[in-house]
Length: 352
Image 1 (cartoon, rainbow, N blue to C red):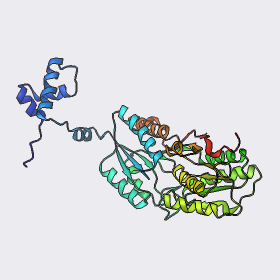
Image 2: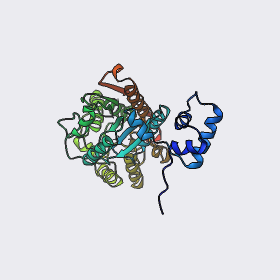
Image 3: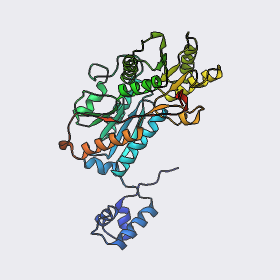
Image 4: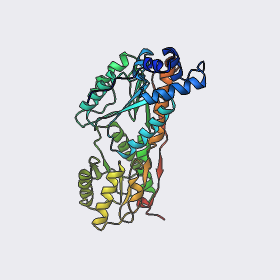
């Protein structure tokens, strides 16, 4: 089928017998054009299938009114709430968003960064990927994150989620992961647990090493000796979580509490424990992390650390848009720490 000709303001003007400038001003809702003319222009534009070339117009204004959002795991429940927060604030400010998913691959993240750079996004919000092949991304130049340098050189602002960056022109929105790990472990201790296992993703990733530190801090504060056998490294997939649960059941004696750094993994672990006749929380109390929807659906309901995803997304978007609108009136580097709290449910309540 032959492609239809793209309708322009000149076509609309000719059809209505008005000037192209009148059509242009009417479509921009210019108050100098009377309401009756605007109505005719909008109706004729819709009838003829006119599409405004926002991209070309924004390029002339040195802006695409688009924000690039780079996530590291799109299918993670918590990321849905982060994206919801970003989209709400961006929409209210008149910005669109382009979402890319690295699937925890640093190579794919670099490709996504190049793609967004060439799409001329006005700014970036980034949840850094980690694929287990290198050191924690605590810096940039030394840790394989040079793919963001082109943004810095063009003074395109970047907001990092859960990653404190030393890179110029960037800001980080984080939670205190050390405190969160401490709170989860302390809660288990307060329930009478003294042999607490910790199931975590690889500690090369900064957020998991910080949660592990919080776990160790709580043990030390309460004079509980750390046992390396109680530390289980496993990714958050169903298969790896199941293997982690088997390792827990093989421990002699069994732990009386488990802190898992992901709610889905915690749900898998808890299901396997229950299938093997282990009572939760009477025999082993369980605490997860993120406050995903799965925690409310399983029985017993899962205690967890609430990750304020929507609020973090909103904060990141607000900071970025503020920087885009007034780049000279904000600090170039800052860290914003959001509050995270425990959500206590049945899975950890050894004491009534």
